[in-house]
Image (tube, rainbow over all chains, first blue to last red):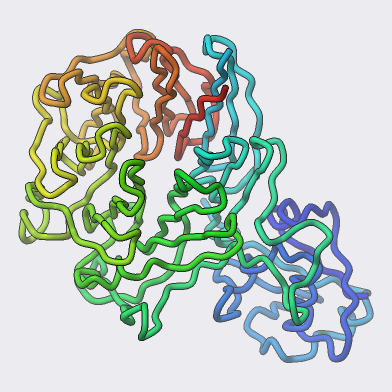
Length: 98
Length: 394
């Protein structure tokens, strides 16, 4: 079971309180996780990736296992700790302000 | 007794203010969509329980919300709870999808506009500024977006398509962003002529379609903008807002960057009616519900100082369609007030006497139940108010 932690605004939008859990078939990549996330929570379509280009929105980052995965290929396999559910994939809203 | 519902969009959520026809005691509901920017909410004239809302964020993009019960509950059109995937297993959530039409057949592939540096810049969707429900069909709604374009949905907000004749009519490459972005912020539908639509863009100007949005023409003759290279250019004017009384669809009132303007021929020619206003800079303008020659503005000091002159919050009313204005101050702060009133943040109800409402960047929503003679705050400490709309309910 893949664990995903959403930023607060998206938890509100998806109407979830805690981290979400996804059952992903096949190789667990960032693209596969986001596809599964949007399938389970369709209200999140377009909020993490651009509707058309499927590119990560500029002010969002993907972290896991103390690594920044934001610039990795969306088709690269995620760390084993994420695949096993030991660690969550973190979707982080960039901190802006003074 | 009639009721009034005020829909307030703010920087950090939406609020719904409700009262009976006396408009003395108010219930406040919200924040809805807490933490998100709510650029605009508006109810359908056909079904007042049908509300549309533009929920947006610099981080998470655009979300369209809809309520079918007057704002008690909300959902994203096309994303019903429990229905997780669409045909072929693809996710839904199409209601958030605004894609410019660049097809050769209908889009006349227009891809760039003028940017701050004078160079051409790609059109990039950022947010929905204004939602205008159809006058005849609750499932039809128009969206004015940044970067400037007009979209339409005919299925209750599930899917959106661009009325691309606007961007493609010829002057698009000359449009440029104002300080708030290149936004299509005003949409006016004509009850007498269902094919006529007016829109306004900062900073391009006003435009009119007489064929349901297929083709468009600029309607900016008479506007003079000394801050652009050609002050009387066909396009490039920073129009802040346009208002119309439903009974006289050929008469338009405009608050421009500077100047309050009036047209008596559907925008074909404008004349200035700033008259004795202390400053003719401002954002809002609206028309009394029952007196088509009575109009309201809130003068703002200047384009560099977005607050009322002398720290006095004054609504100005003209009962002669412009030129002769009176200050309305009773109940409004007359010292140390440095808020702004943004372009979509004034509205009127249709009770007798006409109610007038406006919201400020300081988080106050003021109401007048006597056509502006006196004012009182409904709420005083909301996030910065972006938009105010009013529904008069049976």
